[in-house]
Image (cartoon, rainbow, N blue to C red):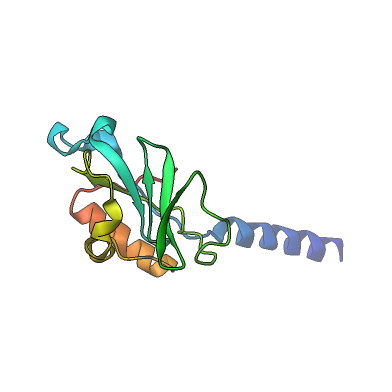
Length: 139
């Protein structure tokens, strides 16, 4: 009986060690040419596709809609637009250094950076980014 228990424990440990969660491999950002690298000084706004919101790095405020009105606040409410593990995904908006109202281009940004709500969609995006040599950086 002791042998059976030992074999079951060993079998369960082997099974557990083989089971893995979803993993994505990110390319090393050092592999990219200097031409594709972006300096932090060239980024004023970050766009959050799942929240349809912006972050202004110059004024350190978030820009988002509340009842059809765009507001600027230091934080976004925790229940804003529901829960999704990809809500914190952000995209750097290049070339808007002098722009004071990025929300005017929300339709363009929604097309360029569609929201992602599932792991399958995220894997597709990462594979597409990898193929086009654009890196995805997690925080």
